[in-house]
Image (cartoon, rainbow, N blue to C red; front, side, top):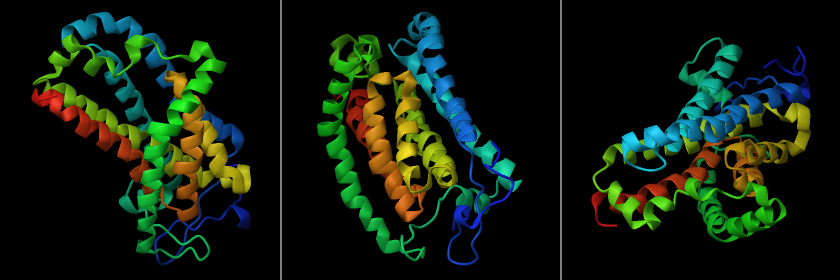
Length: 284
């Protein structure tokens, strides 16, 4: 995880601080970017396709709910991504103070693209962006997935992997009633999926360090990396590229704030948390 060179050029200097003195982030070389990508993507693929089938028989029976093993292992992989982020910040800053995390992961108030000045009014952009994400998830995403699977049918989602099996099959749906530990596991997965794992790694750690290698197209390269990171669920690669580039990376880059993509992506987590809650209460 070394910078592209030992020296940070004027082109590579990025304003990452809040109002006040600015600081500079080192820019990563393409091999370093791909190395971080592999450190996140390959363990998820191994957990999803190798470890999960090996353990799921015994662990799912012990838990009493199908799919528990895969959800648990995906959570482990996402926690590892959070660890990668912390290791990167620790390597660069020498500490994990909130100021270091905030500045180096763009966890700051959105900034005006032209002036770089923080402006709280820019949070209003989240309203249309969240609406666009809903449209992407429910209208555009399924079309992209069908096109992707028709081109690469071997990437189709195995039926036993579909989370919908839990609520579509009456026998499985009955198992959810009162299983609050499983709901807690799902919430833990959601937090690391859209806040501390994927988003913090791709938009907080990687994106601010990619301009030195990809220039003004860093947001697009970030979206491509995000899409192909989904080796653990390859049926979503194309949709991941589109949403990752246009709805997550581009707003983050324009406003220099990872909170933009975190909030947009977390709409997915909130939606499923609300939709699934009645099933655990026995009223679904």
